[in-house]
Length: 156
Figure 1 (tube, rainbow, N blue to C red):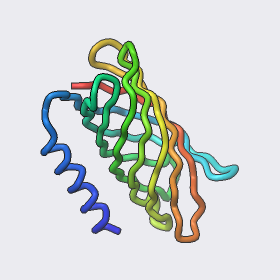
Figure 2 (figure 1 turned 90 degrees about the vertical axis):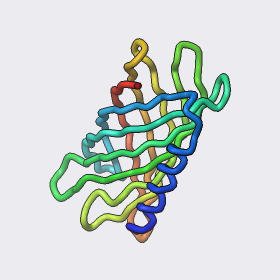
Figure 3 (figure 1 turned 45 degrees about the vertical axis):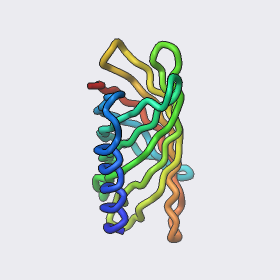
Figure 4 (figure 1 turned 135 degrees about the horizontal axis):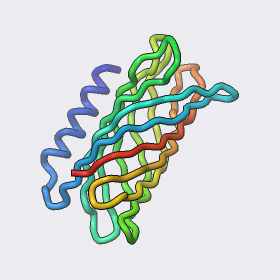
């Protein structure tokens, strides 16, 4: 699985470097939330950095790298790479679909593919808040789980 992670990260970096620099929206954020599987739930916290490109007057696409940790014992930082695409609304709000890959969050866990949706709302020119839902497709006999996050960030 490490080879898949490295290959996916290299592909995301190649896209970011080769894309035209006319949109220039780099972002970094801190986020927290909850993950759940059936009746069990745990808090989570993390950081992410990404880059978005304009895809026309009302659309955008972007890439993101992240590091998240479930805030309970016997877990570790899970690293992820994602792509997102969505609509830009009046006032700067962004609605988007997101999908990606996440490394395993604990030694006895499995890595996962993710899919979800979110909304990002600006607070002035540089700052934003966001909410996001993701479903984690685990496989290999492990149950899938879900996550909801809220975050704040800054754009450059």
